[in-house]
Length: 244
Image (cartoon, rainbow, N blue to C red; front, side, top):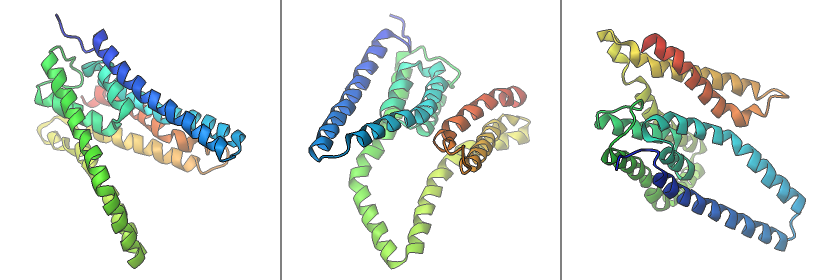
């Protein structure tokens, strides 16, 4: 039987997992509402919170959809849908998938036609993200207690340490953006494509951030990320055509 990244069996397996996760969400939502009633909380406020939370969930969902579309060419729809719906991260999943595909001699524009290659990419994406699940319960409490201890001694150093950790994480992704710029010395300017897309998205994010501070535009704060992602991906098309 020929392998297809969009085979119905894959969709069925993915749907079962996602339905299980949705079932858990609904279960705990119902339990939370019952508990709120037992505590005598204002149900009008509870309903308002549920509705507003559901509405603002649309914003990050748009960025997730962008990730699914970006990976669907090579991995189909089912696997990216699963990875980005349950536990995945858009920035991580795209990099992990691209690196696995490169190791197999493919790229994100190539459609996988061999089952072993598909399984390899799926394992790389899954095993990489599992490290966070394993280390979080082991190290989070120790890190938090250490941060609290540091804050008691010197609040300024605590802020510096926290900012340093964040910048260290960001630097890992920045390296991925700028890693191919040296290709320009050999006449290949394709390495500037991710750089220009990166700065384009950053400019859009900065503009939206400034606008969100003004009256009437505060709603942009929740939609800045998906908008900057979509604009960046849209600009990637002419930039790639120009430099690719």
